[in-house]
Image (cartoon, rainbow, N blue to C red):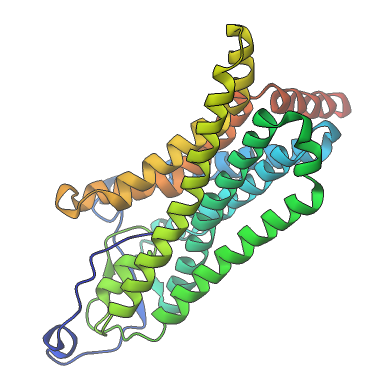
Length: 325
């Protein structure tokens, strides 16, 4: 979710010279590393497989272990599904382009890739907010947890998050396809992001940028505000516990979620909210790669290494597999 400056395009920007309508774009994200293309292919294929397998194991562990059929782990399963989907919107196309020595992506593919990348960024935001609320209720109101986090509410929270994510993406997509793209068709990234596409358009993009600013700010601010509020209340409750062991045991239940939140929002701030004068194109590429590839890959490790329930469920799966072999 990019929050750009709202500088309107002038008539000179839009109509200068003879224009040819663009039917495809060129993704230049890794094209400068020509001598390392096969190495990059192996690296990103490995990262993609680790991400998919790691998140699938989380989903499998939660699905098969009835002990993990609680709101927190249901939300985690949805987050893992979103992470698999998120990396699948960009990396497979990049791998195909490396193997075919092509940089092109059709207009339709590009718009589709942009749509789903927005969906899964937004759903990650809202799921992290919902998970923070779950931890807030569990720690601050433990006796009321079952009555508050009832199945109907959990289903409503998940359905609303997925629905709103698609509505945000659909809004941006419908506005984007009204624009005209001509002459310039090179995107300095390895996937189609909304802001670079708006920059390439020769139409007036003021409305697009205004909507992007409003929706982008809301999508970030609302879940982050919920996370901040939840952790302020959690810390306040933990500090009231008399023993140091009790404080650590209570707060440790938030450790995995807090680690993922720090990684997720830290990357967002680095990619999208630093002043443009402080960023080079290479820094933006690195940041986008961290956000779209590294974060979904690391999340399963954070939850499997720091969460004894997930580790226990994974051990059961492995032991059953070995037994049947």
